[in-house]
Length: 214
Ligand SMILES: O=C(O)c1ccccc1NCC(=O)[C@H](O)[C@H](O)COP(=O)(O)O
Image (cartoon, rainbow, N blue to C red; front, top):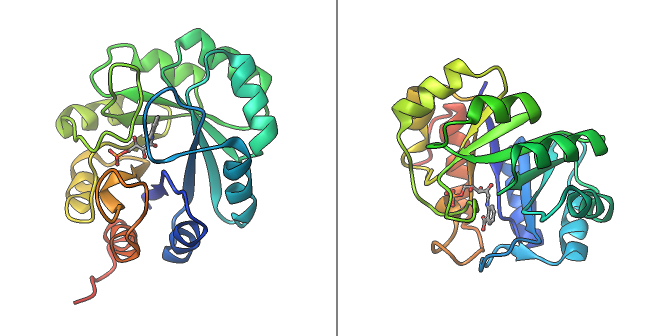
């Protein structure tokens, strides 16, 4: 079974739609040093996380300058897992040692130290990142290389980067990841931060191989 993470949720109704569609994980973005319409203030991120039922994993996506900062944000938002982008190996290791929840490392698929990240993080998000390591770019990467990475690493890998309802079945078939992660590909217009509920349902259905609605 391929897990589905729907990320960059900003509105209550988008979160509720993601849960209703059957997402395994839902993500909220807070405290990132880039311009993104998905960024929420910590209190707002905490309010969304608080709505998530126990059966669904809430993921806080952030780019902490230090492990201290990551730990403080976890205390404030209280997610089930934290996903960090732009962190060094030692920062991921230190954060992981300090907090009780799983740490997911957001990494670029072209990086050559992914095996090391796999030893310090509980899971990887294999993404297309910008120069600061941020995700949400809407760009795909080389799925054949992603397939090799998934096969070589022991850690669970979530495939991210430019996934859409149209390409996700092919991505799952090609890469065979533990899970898939989408943000801009289910937005009503790319880069708005608000989700299209029909796209969101279709994305989850395509991952689980359910027949599509006409
Ligand atoms: O989504 C953002 O704006 C973001 C900003 C900074 C760090 C990470 C961010 N998103 C991480 C995610 O988990 C996205 O779901 C993932 O990168 C996929 O994005 P997309 O290519 O838009 O589907």
